[in-house]
Image 1 (cartoon, rainbow, N blue to C red):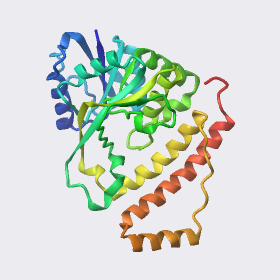
Image 2 (image 1 turned 90 degrees about the horizontal axis):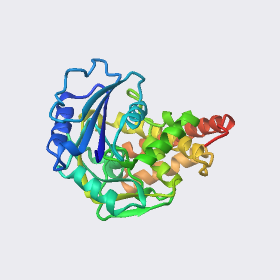
Image 3 (image 1 turned 180 degrees about the vertical axis):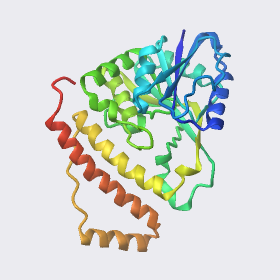
Length: 313
């Protein structure tokens, strides 16, 4: 068994999950060389019996009743049998050589413990013009060349959760971290919440072990983005939740954080004038304000965490 594919889902869209499974079924890596763990994370309508995974000889369908993406990930890590683990979301359509290339990278980059690749968007509706450089909030990643580092602040080389590959020892390190520091298991989405940084925290476990993180242009997947994520409301909620998660993540990792300064009337006026003079869409201005609210919330969460900080890391 060379690689374990951990596919976690919660109330999936049937056509999205079907395309994800089809991309796995078509992989160039022979099915007898990998396993599929399909994990139902407390879906309202249980997934049992609704998906045909009999084509995969090592497929297992598991249930994680505790809501939260990372709870499903943790179950997958405990159940995985291979030395390389690959995390796939229920809206990810993998290039047909994804598994094969993931193993090539694992062999060629023995010094890297967590890696990913390009995430190409497929929008259900046209992308609104006001999104601009905020498109990253939709988990869109364009990797033009192979890069890696072992820098904790080297976010350019730290992969996100969609299509993330890790070595078994990184998974074991993360399981131990979550046991000793329960806040780690709260750093990602639960239900309709948009908390994040669980994947970043997991990738940092590679650095804990003296390994690096990286991204490769050889890995590509298509991210199916529904209409509901192309709304102004989604971007505002994401901006606030992501900023709060970032502050809590940094505090839990001992990275420096700074208390956000209140937005004064003068500061808001400057933002308003900047928007008018530079043609910045109103939506981006509101997204920035939501980001600042998230920083303020995150600062409070971080201070609460630091007061109760576990004795072991």
